[in-house]
Image (cartoon, rainbow, N blue to C red):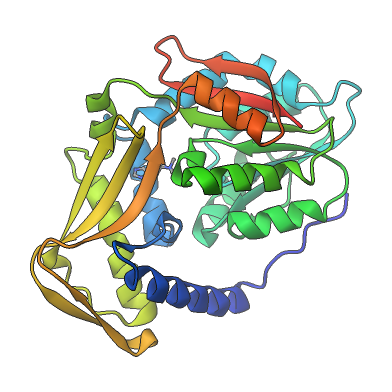
Length: 329
Ligand code: AVJ
């Protein structure tokens, strides 16, 4: 199998800093001010997200892990080709791969011919994943890629051969509805009828349970959100004083979305050296940093259809907290 072009990490860093600067300039000139949750995942952010996944309040990871364990055979069988054509198992936002390892182990044990292509925006996450795979699954072929989703789609389009794409953890919940549909349509383009897409969706449930998952008692989620400002201080020479910012989040059951904010606790002006500019924040003004959409089964069906996919399998847990859905183009 040919390999995906890999990015030279030094040039990537320079380019990424410029992209971040552009993004921040745009986002902080908007009303309301916004920053993308994509930028949470520097090395520290990825480490904090690992901690979030182990929190008692954060049910999605535990639930999806259970779900994948319970249905590993059926899911792996739905992802592999009927005639055992070798394939690429491409994972968008692989992170620590903890949940994916369930499927990887099953596929390897069954002697199925595939290469694992974990894609993640965090170099530290990819390095950690590679290291753990070398020890835990030494026979696995791994072709890691450090990039964001948009570039990952471009890479996929240029990659010949059968593909099974994993998009776990309800990462899809971070997109605004119009972006979500665009993204899935773009994802459908390079896929052939024999390819498969597995997407994890967090389902709508008791609003209090959802809200608690994003406002944990230990304050790890708060640290995760605030770390975005630390990143801007470090990478763009911004001067956010973290003593005057707070994490705030709420679940809106009408829209089915958790929105996360950074709240300015007083009027303040924040210089950002890389932008050669300062930004004014009124007392209690917010920066909107994340959406985490929650779905109903009907919404998932409609989304799949609108994006040009068919739902071939719908796996859910006993409490119906989470769904892993297999789509065919
Ligand atoms: C990684 C996008 C699935 O939205 O639940 C966790 C990120 N943010 N706590 C989510 C997150 C705050 C997470 N995803």
